[in-house]
Image (cartoon, rainbow, N blue to C red):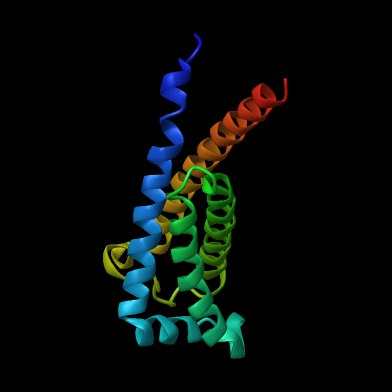
Length: 150
């Protein structure tokens, strides 16, 4: 069964919207409760003296990715960066689960209510969404470039 192109072209904007909502929500909730976010990161010894850099960097990256996902020309880059960030968060969660289960989640807001294992499932879902967005957006860009060069 072949999926119609009109259906496929609507998937990346919808997936983008999910990530925009996720990253704006997560970034703003961290920013609004910045001291708590930094304190929770400090409990995880891996970051050491880099907590200030990591805490600022995560928020800026989340908001930058959300911005990139807003526009068709930068959407693929936004998908790649969100994939990278979600993978980093997933590695962080796996490390927490295996080494330091007593560290609280530093996500903020509603996501703060998730346990580490639920958060892992949440991340795996978004990794899947990201892969779908990347594959469709890459194919769309490839088809567009191919049509314009022939």
